[in-house]
Length: 313
Image 1 (cartoon, rainbow, N blue to C red):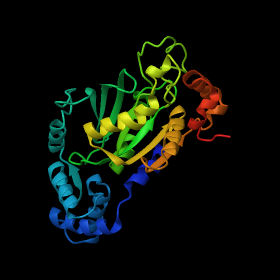
Image 2 (image 1 turned 60 degrees about the vertical axis):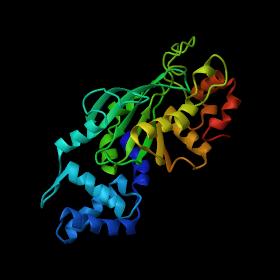
Image 3 (image 1 turned 180 degrees about the vertical axis):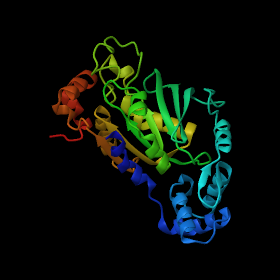
């Protein structure tokens, strides 16, 4: 079910200009040496639609696409096949396919690089300005975008008690993201180890339960700034480190994360997110025990949480 709920966000990001596709598809067919046939034209058009580097349209993008496909794919008369040696080389050029070496000058520390669905899941940590703690997150980079500098992405916000690993291990989303050539950005649900008294005392408040809001009440206000982290700091970080697009991005989530996705997108007014979706969200937190507990603890009272309620009275 989690995989299916992603399709709305994935499909929104996958749309491209039909006229640009037709023109560039012809260019691709000629460059790759395809025979002039209906089936080969369809193949070229299909490849074009799945390439993020061609969303800008025009011959320059098509040339970049050919550069990528010639380097990372072999062609024959029947099908395209992954050129694993070239793909591994491309990953090494971007910091290493199987090690945790971080690029020089990077603000992140790579914890793991995990091959999955033809792409790479990169789990990393960094020192957060928003939370004043180390934060852990993961980014899935799909195959076929190694040379792109504007990768569309879906940001996934997880629910209560989760960290950045739950979605990666249980959702089965990577094959869908790989097919649509979009990245997945998967943050943690709260700061960890902030040293706030009581942060680990319950499962629905504190660690693993940041509720994607900025706390205003001491002692939580120093570290529990998850709204700012998700909407400002994390996007800026992954845009710089992984070339994630600043404008082709969608947001979704489950449970507490669905609450976060809906309220973040609604408060933004459509300026930063091209789509929003949610799976079993806490859509009316001012009227449910989880939301009431969070708003009282982080904001001082339930009424103060009205601005973070996707379905206020």
